[in-house]
Length: 107
Image (tube, rainbow, N blue to C red; front, side, top):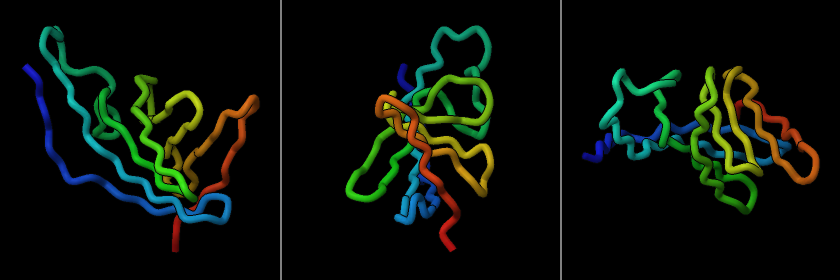
């Protein structure tokens, strides 16, 4: 049994390194069949299988949610996004070393 939970996406807008960034959270497909308890790690009202679309500069990044404990984070191995501090999200890029992109809320 596949459980699909339709929900309107959440949006947030930021300025990262001087350029606008749009964040769109989306629900993924989660199949809780066979889990003895509830679905683990549902902090921030997100579930394993959820993701985020980041539109920044000339790119749209689709990042899956990690299963790390704590504040939800999203990564594809190269890009990483997390909003632990709602005023200063963490937006990193790995290119041999870690590049930290500075973000602030769009006024």
